[in-house]
Length: 140
Image (cartoon, rainbow, N blue to C red):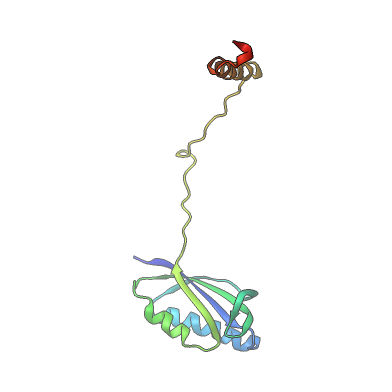
C-alpha cells in the first residue's frame, strides 16, 4: 500500500534559478528512482526564515508530495540532505483531512428562547440567593 509523504526543502537563495531548477529536478528523479511517485510539486517561493540557518536569512521553499511504498525513508532523506545547496529538509507523512459526509454530520438546532423565560429564570436564581443570604443586624 502506498503511503503519502511530503518532502519540504529549503534551498539556498545564493544559487541562481538554473541551478535551483537543477536541484528540484534532481530531487524529483531521486524520489522516482527510489520507487516513489510524485503527485504534486509546489513552485519555489522565497521565504524569510525565523532564524538564520547556515548564515542565510532567506531560502527557496519547495514542497514535494509523493506516494511511496517503502516505509524506510532514511536513505532517501540522507541523499537529499547530502546536497549542500539544500539548507534544510523535512520529511513527514502527508496530513490527510478527513471529510465527514453531510449525512453523518450532527448539527445542533438552536432553540429560540423567549426573553420572558430568561427573566423568570434570573428571578428564580437571584430570588433563591436572597433567601439563602443570612440577615444582617438591621434586618433582624
